[in-house]
Length: 69
Image (cartoon, rainbow, N blue to C red; front, side, top):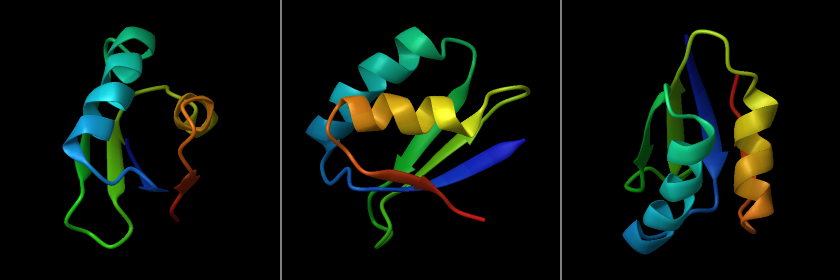
Protein backbone atom coordinates (compact mmCIF):
# COMPACT_ATOMS: atom_id res chain seq x y z
CA UNK A 1 0.00 0.00 0.00
CA UNK A 2 1.18 3.53 -0.73
CA UNK A 3 0.37 6.33 1.70
CA UNK A 4 0.61 9.91 0.43
CA UNK A 5 1.23 12.84 2.75
CA UNK A 6 1.20 16.61 2.32
CA UNK A 7 4.20 18.07 4.18
CA UNK A 8 5.95 21.35 4.94
CA UNK A 9 9.40 19.95 3.99
CA UNK A 10 10.92 22.49 1.58
CA UNK A 11 14.52 21.56 0.80
CA UNK A 12 16.85 18.64 0.17
CA UNK A 13 18.58 19.48 3.45
CA UNK A 14 15.28 19.03 5.29
CA UNK A 15 14.65 15.78 3.38
CA UNK A 16 18.02 14.51 4.63
CA UNK A 17 17.12 15.43 8.21
CA UNK A 18 13.71 13.76 8.08
CA UNK A 19 15.11 10.88 6.04
CA UNK A 20 17.56 9.98 8.77
CA UNK A 21 14.65 9.49 11.17
CA UNK A 22 12.51 7.68 8.59
CA UNK A 23 15.35 5.26 7.84
CA UNK A 24 15.89 4.50 11.53
CA UNK A 25 12.26 4.20 12.55
CA UNK A 26 10.96 2.67 9.29
CA UNK A 27 13.91 0.57 8.07
CA UNK A 28 11.85 -1.70 5.80
CA UNK A 29 9.66 0.95 4.19
CA UNK A 30 10.33 2.67 0.85
CA UNK A 31 9.73 6.42 0.87
CA UNK A 32 10.38 9.51 -1.28
CA UNK A 33 9.59 13.21 -1.37
CA UNK A 34 8.35 15.23 -4.34
CA UNK A 35 9.47 18.78 -3.53
CA UNK A 36 8.37 19.98 -6.99
CA UNK A 37 4.74 19.40 -6.03
CA UNK A 38 3.04 22.34 -4.29
CA UNK A 39 2.03 19.99 -1.45
CA UNK A 40 5.64 18.73 -1.04
CA UNK A 41 4.42 15.16 -1.21
CA UNK A 42 5.88 12.30 0.82
CA UNK A 43 5.03 8.82 -0.46
CA UNK A 44 5.58 5.81 1.79
CA UNK A 45 5.20 2.28 0.41
CA UNK A 46 4.41 -0.18 3.18
CA UNK A 47 2.66 -3.40 4.08
CA UNK A 48 1.47 -2.63 7.60
CA UNK A 49 2.63 0.87 8.60
CA UNK A 50 0.15 3.10 10.38
CA UNK A 51 0.02 6.57 8.80
CA UNK A 52 0.05 8.13 12.26
CA UNK A 53 3.65 6.90 12.67
CA UNK A 54 4.84 8.97 9.71
CA UNK A 55 2.88 12.01 10.89
CA UNK A 56 4.39 11.69 14.37
CA UNK A 57 7.93 11.42 12.97
CA UNK A 58 7.59 14.57 10.87
CA UNK A 59 5.75 16.52 13.59
CA UNK A 60 8.49 15.65 16.10
CA UNK A 61 10.99 17.29 13.75
CA UNK A 62 8.90 20.47 13.47
CA UNK A 63 7.24 19.76 10.11
CA UNK A 64 3.58 19.68 9.23
CA UNK A 65 2.32 16.40 7.80
CA UNK A 66 -1.18 15.26 6.84
CA UNK A 67 -2.26 12.15 4.99
CA UNK A 68 -4.04 12.83 1.72
CA UNK A 69 -7.09 10.77 0.76
